[in-house]
Image (cartoon, rainbow, N blue to C red; front, side, top):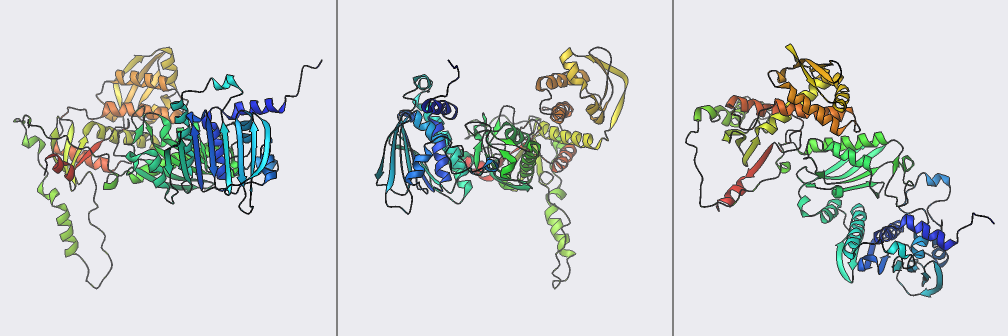
Length: 593
């Protein structure tokens, strides 16, 4: 007797259902994608008991004829693939022809559909994969699919369903993720007869993004629009002040399809590098468009994962897009993109102790010539202007700089620099600011391979464990480009022969031990460049002005001038803000003025 048998159709469909349908949210996803492929502009999703008892999706799409409706319930029946070339250039959301028969095999299923040009609809009922009846019915144009009692005939699957709130949370997230990518479509989600979410159709994708992401991102979204043939990237990213503790704030789409892709997520995080605190994730809505034949969406039953033909190209495009957008939009000269404003607390009855030992000569106020620079420049421009009949505009003699133009008025706890700007009070963290300056200087020197070095009169040795030594040795050539000359000295011992000028006089062993520990913990899975960046961050931290360290007026002005030359002056390499703002209005409000 043969041991190999052909499975009955119902069993085959239930196995397919196990691959495609993980939970009620999977049914919702498949049905919504079919509705979108049908050209729907209004989609209604109704569920009961978290999708356990009922899932119904209705749309106003093109509908189906009686024959097509019956065929759609057969396995491998699809209107979206005709030959093998279509399989490798898929432009629709659904395509396998497995979703409907799989859903029908594990639910009490009904389908009502009508084409626009026909007078009557077709109604089909299926119970656990068995056809019950087909009849004519009255219904509006479009399609409505109802799936009751999910997994009623596969109790082994049903027992793994979670609580109603948990399953409803997955459904809400699923509808939101699809709605984010289709702002021109109206979505309504009801649970147990009550409205849960309603997103009207809109021409403004930012409105849809704000409605889904929450009001805290409303004023923090930055438009992204870059194109590097054949990759185009559009969407929105939030300023680094808006973060989440998980990656749930990342909405990624490839050719209109919502995906979860580690490579793209990694590229986003790399684009935000140096602007986020450890353990925080950014908020972003990115639409990546590539030729259909350059992405394979048929690598996972749920179609959440994709495979790019040229992943490195896509990765670099995403990193570049985010880096450039943040650099252009978060420059401190733009008041609209300043770091998050901190509102002072309401005043209390205690004013606090006044520093009687405040040294006016040490802190010094800004010289009058700096305060009047704008007036002087304007006067010179007027005095040297051409005849009024000459319409040629004179070039400005002095270009405004955000930090350089701040009026330095004092220090707070020898840590925060207090400055006056035209629209309020600016506080600069001197350590974070100097750390950013040193980090970018180190990066430039490493790229140019022209470090300023200083030979040690007495070379210094240090010991590592075996894992640290193996990781540390890989970075020795990169350290040399920074002016840090280190050589193996036998076993797990290393010797330092020269150091960058900025490390002159600094304690080396604690820094090098920390670098070795850091490199060992993060590894090289993300590339040598990122590992080196982590080392540069540590060097910058050890080389920078510290908190509680007094600075002179000249040092402050030099610091501000250098900040204006930085690519990313608003954040230290660890992602902390280098400055914050109290607006005039916030100060007035605190004093009830």
